Image (tube, rainbow, N blue to C red; front, side, top):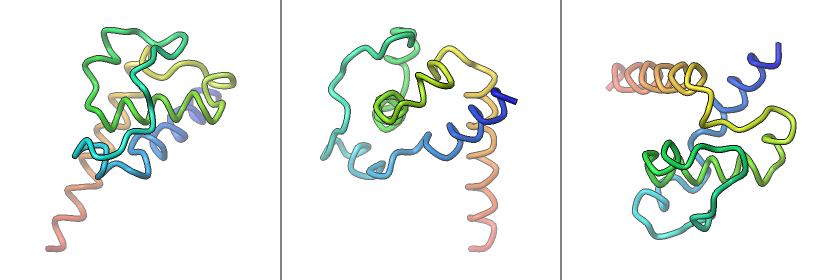
Length: 94
């Protein structure tokens, strides 16, 4: 059940509220720190807005209850696929 809530929470938070500005590098929430428990190599491979989401994950306390997010590849893959499918469905209307 914990994995379900972790996947659901990451699906909701994987794009931070300021994603557009983070992509353009106009606004940053995080500060290039190393959140505890996250793998540095995986964190570096993430796009800027995804790194911001990891910082947010830790700062709102989800890491304390659900653990670090970058080490769980199944959840990351699941959320990426759901995000692609959702985006494709939005574009289908246009």
